[in-house]
Amino acid sequence: MNDTLSNSFFYFFSATPQVLAAIMALFGVFIIYKMQALKDELIVIASEVLKLLESFSFPLLDVEEEKRRTAIAAFSDAIQHKYLFFVNSVINGIPNFLDEDAIRKSTAKVIISRFNNGFSLHQFLFKSTIFLSSFTAFLIIACLSTIPLGCFLLTHLVLLNWIYGIIIISLVLCFVGLIIILKIALTSQTVFR
Image 1: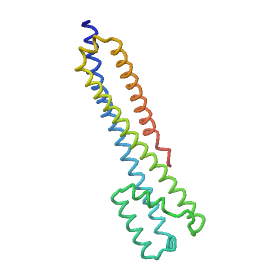
Image 2 (image 1 turned 45 degrees about the vertical axis):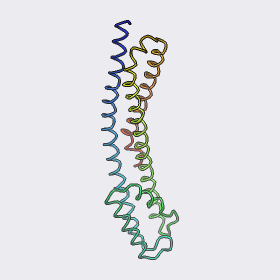
Image 3 (image 1 turned 180 degrees about the horizontal axis):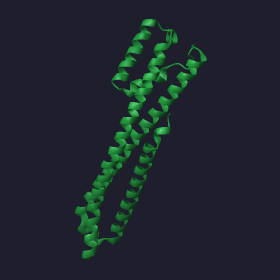
Image 4 (image 1 turned 120 degrees about the vertical axis):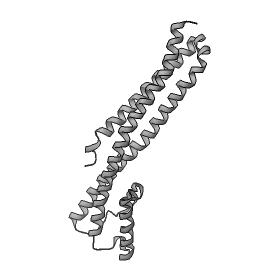
């Protein structure tokens, strides 16, 4: 068995998981911070919607005034506790055919549109972070589980080359995905303003 090849094999398959774990941790810090800041902005926008709803002097969708006040109180409670999914369902349930004057109607549409854009970004960051974190964790496990097979793989160079190639392609995909998500997260301040 070639010592240089053996050293390279063990170095590659032990160093790669360490680098991936460090990048995943750093990536997580940036994305979690951005998602928290985005959540706080969405709550501010939802508070604007709440103020707008409280300013309406008529029952929404011909519901009695008491039910309207109860719904607004539940919406206010969801804002205070930062329940984004409930806030999103309430905001998307606001009718587009408000009978108020045109200024309030256009204001409501703009605020709701800002919230929907921000919520979509929040959901995208959440889902893509989970997907890429899972992919990175799988890649780490794949690298670490290859190490015990070192004696077998070092005698089968074609198989070893294929594994190297697959791992390198997976690493590139992982890094590209992380860069794309970071770019979207760091440049998203103008997306929903």
